[in-house]
Length: 226
Image (cartoon, rainbow, N blue to C red; front, side, top):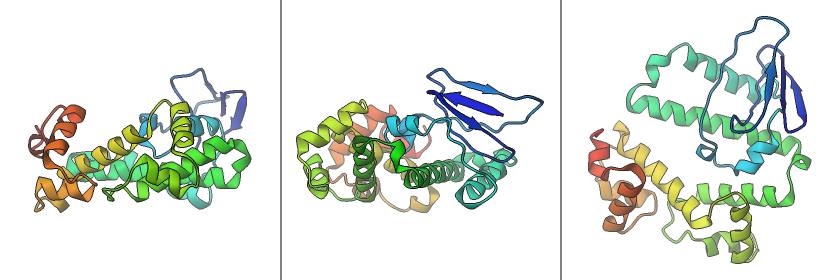
């Protein structure tokens, strides 16, 4: 098959993987009958800037060895056992699948760093730092900038190019983690406050308001599945 997007062409063989952005023009054609597996997710579900993902669109990732084989096999197994995606364990499996996709894309960037601009590479590094420190209540734009030896203003400009802000990205990743934990049986014995603190929220009232704004339900109602 042939995948085309952004003036790039990927010739896909059985088992290969590739990513493309459905919000922009693309072409996917096959010379004969073919069976596809498509995993769709919002771009911000990955711990990667959207422009980085875009620069990896229509790039063939071999599915017969290495990470491509591992990720492809995991996704195939999920597609053949869709019933396991129900309930809290299903949410965890979906998160695992996206983590694997993120890892695969990171590996592709390591192999071909010339695909990405210095700004894009900085954006990836900043998001990786944020992801590793979400638990820290002191995590802030200033802390992220200092860790990368750049000014806070420069960091804000990098995130602005991706259509978001540093603070909103941190808040969104923390809320996503807290939302998963509240419905995860593994954390059923923890109080809402303990779950919130695990993701850097020390003010219970602030966490409750922020969570309700994001999910449309209080943390307690969300935990009950309402």
